[in-house]
Length: 298
Image 1 (cartoon, helix red, strand yellow):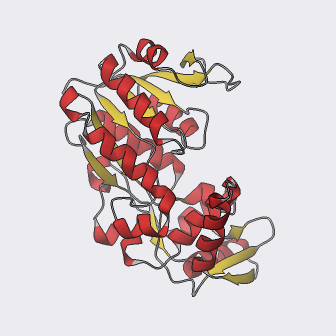
Image 2 (cartoon, rainbow, N blue to C red):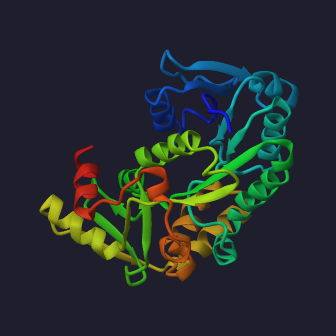
């Protein structure tokens, strides 16, 4: 496969998008940010910005994507139809590689999708991409577990760095597979740099496999403070999140996802069940204390 140099990022201003754009630029790729015309997002001067109408109409997408080698779709996987439409446009425009908005838990596991039904959208999108292989559009999906640094700073993983309070799910011993956003971005660079080795497959990465109890101990050591601990059931979190989402309340999504992360389900530990692609992509695992210290200092 010819080198992939021209890369369009959809959703380039989000949590994954910003470090991805930075990593691609640093690696020498030609980066285009595809935005909605209503967007006010700004990007580094080296980034070419192409805007389309808010509904991502196919004719405009095809026109923008002609001459592009790869598309990285980082939009939230809320609408399967929207994501499939972007894939259709990429195939029609002659794009060679598509990286879908996977980036999380192992959705190849039916048990994980059963625990967090909204992950079914990701599964549907990837299955649709498989039907595009014959047209010349290859794909790579990234499973990275939780975003470790972002999850700590946002309290998503149950740790509030501002108040030194931890919410521990069940016994705190569920496996937590996680990757920093910077290494998620580096995995994308590696995928595009190794197109043949990464074509039409899932890749599994992590910086750390740990538990909430281990993270809490490391946080107390790093901060030099005794943390306040609250307890919660992962099953209750999933139930609460699912009920909210079923009523159209998107605020239920975090509970639903974190309840899946801390479910204790063996299939959630993809490092054990699937193995890792770290060596293929040039990524490393790090000591927990190092990752905690970096997160606190950031």
